[in-house]
Image (cartoon, rainbow, N blue to C red; front, side, top):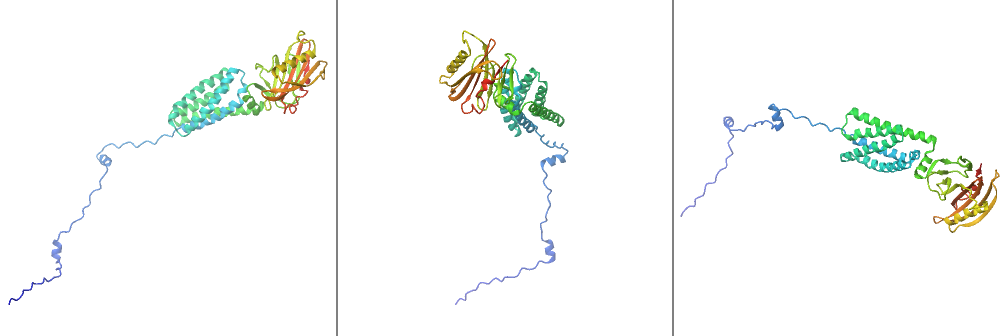
Length: 370
C-alpha cells in the first residue's frame, strides 16, 4: 500500500536585515539641481545683444480739450444768435450771420461731443469747420470793421486748431488754450457791456423778429418824425419799431410800431393831399374806410367822430370797427389829419381781446402834427 507523499510547506522567513556594509553598497539615486530655463530675450542679453527700447507711454491727447472748447463755443454761438444780430445794419449780411450761427451751434455741439470722446476720425472734419469759421466769420466781422470781434474769432479758431491738429508740445498747447479762453472771455465781457445799453431780453426778442429794431418803447414816450413834422405818444409798454424798408399793411407808411407779444400794430401813413380824391376830412375818412373794407371785406363800423385834435387846431376824423384778419377777430381804429398839403392817416389794430389792454382806443387821436 502506497503511502501518499505530502508536499513540503514552504516556510516564510523574515527578511534578513541588511548589514551596514550591504547598505552602503546599495545604489541610492541622487537629486540633481537643473539650471532654470532663461527666456530667449535674457539669453540674447546674456550673449551681449542690445536691449530693446522700452515702449513709450502714449502721449496725452488734446482732442478732449478741443472738444470742450467747441462745446463752450456752441454756447457762445447761441448768445451771438440771440444778442448780436440786432447790431448788424446790412440785411443780407445779417441773414448770413443768423444762418451761420444756427449751423455753427449744431456742428460745434456734435464735434465737441465726439472730440470729448477722443474720436480721432473727427479730426479732419473739425479742422475744416475751424478753417471755414475763421475765414467766413472773421471775414464778415472784418468787413464790418468790427476789429475786436475779428481778433476774438482768430484767437478762438487758431487756439482750437492747434489742439486738434496733432500732438502739440506742452508749451504750444498752453498757448493755444490761453488764446482760445482769452477770446471767449473777451466775447463774454462784450455781452455784459451790451446788456448795459439794451436789455438782453430786448435783443433776443428782436433777433427772433428780424423785422423789428431798436429798444422797447414805454408808455408815454414820444416818437418824433423830423421828416414830416409830427409826434406820436406810445399808448402802452412793449412796442417796437419795424424796419423802415419792410412792406407795411398799407402804402406810404412812415412809422410802423408792433407789439410782438400780442400782435398789436400802430402805424402812421403820410401822403400828399389830393383834392380830386377827397375834398375834405370826411371824404378822406371814407377813403380810409374803403381801403379797410378792401383788405378786410367783413369790416363793420362801430363808431365815427370828427372835430379838432386835442392840444392843437388840426382837424381830425376817426372811424372804428372790427373785422377778420388772418382768420381771427381784430379791432381797428383809423384817424385822418390834414396838415398843410399833407394827409396823415393813423391806424391801430390788434386782436379784439387785447385791443383795450394795449390802450389802443383813442390812441390814433393823440398824434400831434406840427
